[in-house]
Length: 50
Image 1 (spheres, rainbow, N blue to C red):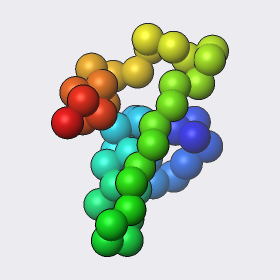
Image 2 (tube, rainbow, N blue to C red; image 1 turned 90 degrees about the horizontal axis):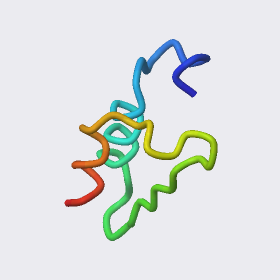
Image 3 (cartoon, rainbow, N blue to C red; image 1 turned 180 degrees about the vertical axis):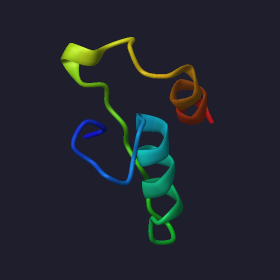
């Protein structure tokens, strides 16, 4: 998504934007892409641990 999106330059920005815009009482489930395992920014990993 970061390669084809004019609005986002990294995965963290995508995830945080989606999270901020979720309806009340919703959950966001994030799963690593199998070909991109352990390659995401440290910032997104910390965000997901909270």
